[in-house]
Length: 267
Length: 146
Ligand SMILES: [Zn+2]
Image 1 (tube, rainbow over the protein chains, first blue to last red):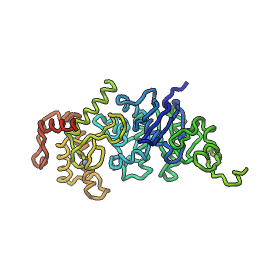
Image 2: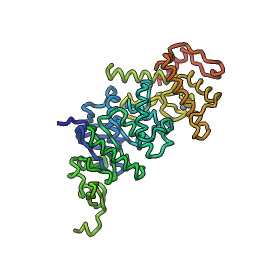
Image 3: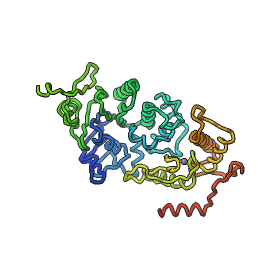
Image 4: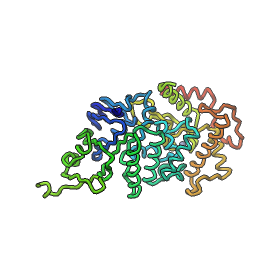
C-alpha cells in the first residue's frame, strides 16, 4: 500500500480574525496526481505554502512525508518538495540571478549559502539548458519573460529530485506553445515517475487524464475531495463557481467546462 | 550531524556573515531578516536593504577588488545590456563570484572567512571601511540586544 506523503487534520491558517484555510482534512498518497481547483482567494496558494514549509498553519495538524515542520525539520522537508509558484517567488526573486534561484532549491531556502559545490552548479546549468533558459543563467529573474521565469522555477523545483511536485497555476501567463510543452512534461512525469504531483489551476482544460484525484476549495474550506470523476462534476462545480456549469470531456480526454444556458437549466 | 545542528549551524553562519561580509552588488552592509513571516525561526536570510534583495554577500576585500577590476579594466560580462549603474553592479557581483570561487579552491577562503592574512593593494583598498575586532564585538552585542 502506498505511503501517505501529505496529511492534514482540521488544519487552519488564520490571519488576524480571518481564516485563510479552515478545518482542512486531506490525505495524499505517494505517486498520486491531484488537481486543486478553486477560485481566486479560495486558499489554494496558502495551502501549498504551508505544505512546502513557507507558511505556518495556526491550528490542526500537518504532516509532510511523515514528519511535522519545525525548526529542525524545515529545510530537510522543504527541499523534498519541488514547489513552482510564480505568485509566491516573484516577490523575493525579482533581482536574483537565475542560477542562484535554481541552486536555492537544493537547500529549501530562498537564498543560497557557501555549501554549493561545483557539481551543484553543473547540475543547475544542465537543468536550465534542458528548460531552454541556459543562456539566461546570469541574468536577473525580472529580465526574463513569464514563460522563462516559469521554466526557471521548474528547474529550481527539480534540482533536489523532489518526492512531491507542487505546481501552482503553472500555465498562467504562458503562450499557447509554452503551455502545451508544460502539459506534456507534467504528463510525462506523471506516467514515468513515482513523484506525487499537486497541480493547482483554474483552467479546466489543463486537467489531463493523468490526474485521478481532485480537491475543490471554496472560501478556504474543502468543498469536495476524492476521485476526480466523483468530485469534478457539474453540480459541485456550479457551487464552487457560483453559477450553473456543465462538465464534459472532449475527444482528447480533456475536461471542458461550459456555462449552462437557461434552457439546459430548466431541462 | 543532526538536523538540529544543521539548522543551528546555518543560523550561526548567517549571523557571522551578516556582520563580516558586504553585498556583492553594492558593497553595502548586510542584515539578518525574516523575509517570510512564519513561526519557524529558521526561515531567516541575509538581506541587503540597499538593493532590496536576499544576498549571501562576499568578503569586503573581494568586493573592493572586484569593483576595482570592473572599473579599471572596464570588464563587461553583459555586453547586451545597457551600460548603466545596474549593469555595473551585476558585473561586480559576477567578478565577486569568480574571485570567491578561485580563493576557495586555492584554500584561502572558507565560509567563515579568509584563512590567510590579506594585504590589499592600496590602490584597490581606496576608502575601504576597516572594522577592528572590538567594533565587530560591539556590533554583535547591539544586534543581539536588538
Ligand atoms: Zn546591495
